Image (tube, rainbow, N blue to C red):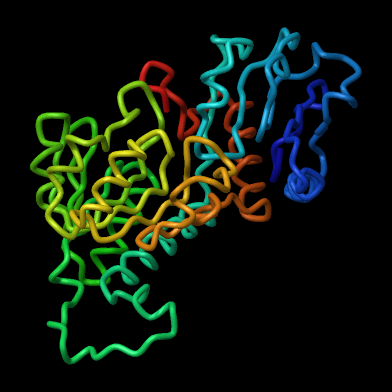
Amino acid sequence: MSGAEGYNRTMSVLYIGYEENDPTWMREIRAADPRIDLRTPADVVDRERVRYAVVGRTRPGDLEGYPNLEAILSLWAGVEHLLGDETVPRDVPIVRMAEPSLTRGMVEYVCCHALNILLRTDRYADGGWSHPQKRVPRFAPDIAVGVMGVGVLGEACAAALSRLGFAVNGWSRCAKKLDGVSMFAGRAELAPFLGASDIVVLLLPHTPDTAGVLDREALAHLPAGASVVNAGRGELIDDDALLEALDADRLDRAVLDVFRTEPLPRDHRFWHHPRVTVTPHVASVTNPATAAPVLIDTLNRLQRGEPVWPLVDRTRGY
């Protein structure tokens, strides 16, 4: 749909979002290729012409009734909302979002909080005066950061943490090799991974296999004084077990960007716990300006019958 190739004017691309920035998304996508016939559901005249759907937030039934739908392109890295919707056609492939700003945002979030934990900057938030000479100084090589989930985002975070000087561990479902990262794989190696990590960063998707992966038993394997950063999904952590570990001084700190219920209810203990930092699901946000060319490239590849990436594996749940 760009360059020398011709755009197939016999087809339409459906856009669904339900977000305030939907007009921005549609403007950026059309700017990336002015020839695209991009339509909202209300603008679709002939459902048979719709071959692709670009979606953010969806509601059950949104993707029903498009008989020639060939692919669904998610604006988000997470696709649980699509996989959990039984009205989404099971035979239609789903492509997750992977774009430069999304990756950079996650890298900066993770590195920021790893450094904050290293430097103990939260101790100074109340404006008090402490005496650093009374503390033994520590530096990045003294701290091991364990990254749970080493896909696109996790691999980039692991590389950035390594460049900062941290010792880096990685944990994944299957065996994987990354330069400069001590890798662990599978449930059998989860306890050793946790025991070797002073800061654990969760970047896993929410699947039946990962739900509650950081439960009471898993938290007990962390070294005394360890910290947790969750920028993956709220369902990965047992909230009560995490609070118990913090209250008992077994853990030093938790930085949480994702929660089982969002927005996080105002009466939740996370808001008021002195060792918990809450951020409102802002660790990494897709940027329409940089994501639109990625979407157009994916649509071009689909039209040419070429492989697209990252394609969702429904059996794995991501």
